[in-house]
Length: 219
Length: 213
Image 1 (cartoon, each protein chain N blue to C red):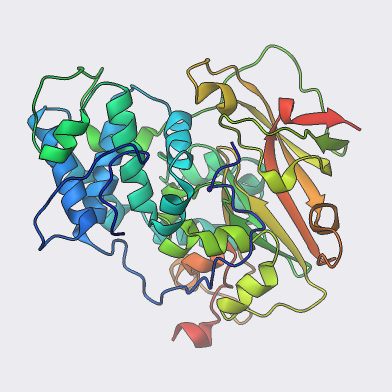
Image 2: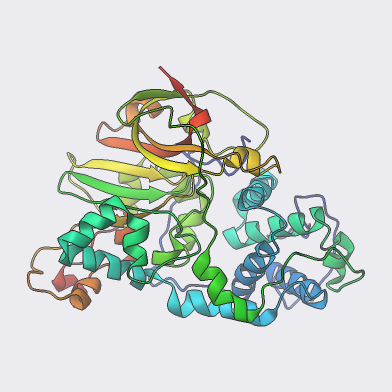
């Protein structure tokens, strides 16, 4: 979707203002936000792709004004309601009002080290060989789905070069919407800055994205 | 934020104690509901927080870089199969499942961004800093990397090539900075002390021995 999250190349969003000696967390609630988000992800009720899509579906004004932990929490509330684990009334009350859906698993303290060490690999085998080879010139597709995609707007309809075939991975555009993992080959595609930004682009700059096979066309 | 809506804007107003900030109250309410329902274990949250406060952070990545500087065979392995090479040092897991290492050279400087969200190599760098997840960095890194680097106090030679890696998939990128001059004979511990977090994102360089002191 062409949402507020797709930020590459936008102007006017202000200075970066890196913080010297930045702490891991800036407030206690950020710690709880991290832990609650990871704990609820462990239910197995939604995929990482669905949770990313829930974040980019926040209203643009909310998204752009929020810290990232706030984005996480707002999206998590939407996911928990959508999947029947909590109700709006419970979030307002701050207490359980009814028994909701039971998750496949609840992350307990003894499971944390193992779960974090294991992570969630997204590589999956596919039957067919990769369609594109390293060094090949390709064009990214021009599409504007209202659904989830990981092809940023700035890199659509651009000519680039396949720099690496990175293996085959879960296809987020489908997986975010419960349509299955449908793995595809993934490629690193490099673009000269002039191809993306046109006049005045820095000639020393190359930008790459990681693109699923169906994002790409032969030139 | 002064808004009190829940979810993707479809919620209605609610009230909370004035001495909490909005987000404190909001997260507290959420954690309380989930705990009462038996859906989360507060001790698990403590364990997650402790992991990223004390165990998983940029010192992990610094060990990887120091080893790569010290051991050409390891550097070669890191180039070919970063996930396995990094796992051999004990760094695995969440947001480090599919690692790629990109090496700075005298000709090319690498910079990593996630324009679409906040993808970051947790297993080697820990949790991302606020600026990495915020709109200014995410918008500008791909169009004006030299301007971005200037904000970090880094001016690269005009002829140096800049390669920006937008983490649009599940590959997580670790920049291996150039080994500083004047470090011949340094052991891995001394080398690791020169490797800053920002140098592994590409918004900085490794410290010289003089800077580190």
